[in-house]
Image (cartoon, rainbow, N blue to C red):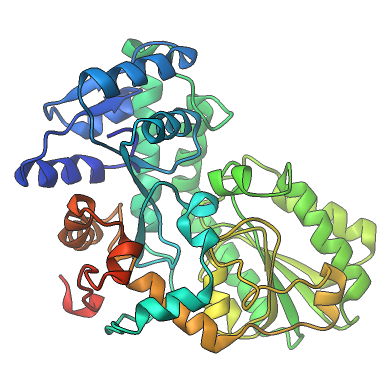
Length: 418
């Protein structure tokens, strides 16, 4: 096991795998990794430099006779290098990620996730063929994002341990592009500012919902997010923001408005709000442009005309509601049946809706394969997730092959799971 989501999930997964007879090792790269392992056996600290990691990893894979590696996200440098080494040696790679159908699901795949997922090369037709022998009951998509408070708490705790107790790991370098101290301060500030942000968000959302104007919705992402950095055509969030505003100014009817919704975990490290304001003023549309700091997406999707994103997983909620979608990056839902290929200015002027019959089958396919009920951050979410995902990790078949073979793990509606 390499790095996992903030919090105790990887330690609990290791306990479950050991109870099934597996031998589990955990490579830790900082004090946060070590603390959340909580004294479990099999902890291997990596104390070297980043450039030493490939050689050390290759040696461990060979000398420890590793059969599988488990990690959270496959694009951070230490994980990408480990994945390449594992593939060269025929070692199975298990990848966890946030749910493609958030909030009440986590993603489990083999080999890669997001732009590296097997879904990228799949058409809807073979998905429908695999579903022909299945069609189990699946839960409806909830309206809210999920374990946000727990997510922020564990993020702040993790970065505190790294900042204050990391003497043993003097060579550790964060993959985020800022220092651990800066990361901790951002998490702490977000925790402290939550009440004020909630009030601000409520006021801004009411202005949009009760403004009486048609609007288009832009789903912003974290600029440092792995999916944005690895699978996006943009070097920065600013490029995407300016493209959306230019397309809106050129193509949208003059009585339409544009709403930018920040990611729920946006922490202010990128001056998103300032960039939107400045670009809107320059283009002469400032009175028709709005910025919302996170909040429930369902409150906005109900009246939106269209949705634009780079490759946010939240776009699946727009597709589920039949809204026209424009996506610029590589995403598992970027199928010709779902995503518009019109230029952005034409998209705002004349939107084309997704094929809802095809999307219904696609969504059902995800819910019966890689989307596992539960989550990483709340105690209840972890219980639900571990009940199913341990068997999936131990299976000889990955989730997609298991469904095709008629051996997919059983699915239970979330309402019946405690």
